[in-house]
Image (cartoon, rainbow, N blue to C red; front, side, top):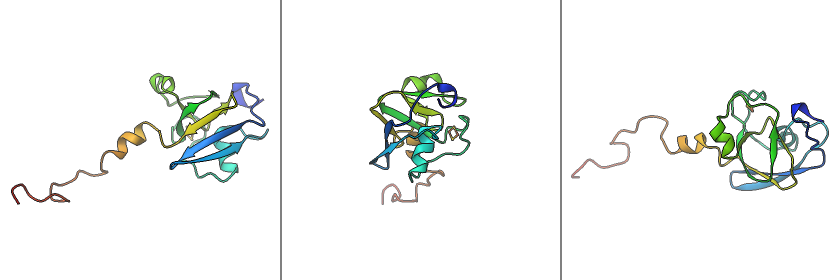
Length: 128
Ligand code: FES
């Protein structure tokens, strides 16, 4: 039994979707989370605190079911939309797919430049 989820995830597999690619990982008895299992198997996934606080490990469950041991960062509407903290999540079904390309605020912030864009950056002046 792992953490507070009470989930027996040993032997389950999870598909990790990142940068448009799928990678199948398996969980063993030592893995505390999907993130731990994926890192152990060479995945380069984002994380920081591993404590359910920072949401750096946020991803979206697009198939199957998972349980989180703790959540100190996701809002109820995010959880309702399928977002989870991979550092706190273990699979509770056999068909879990988690998508790190669908991370909510990351998608939204990617739409905006990191600094204000001046009109002269790439556009000709009006009337030119
Ligand atoms: S790594 Fe911080 S919440 Fe998962």
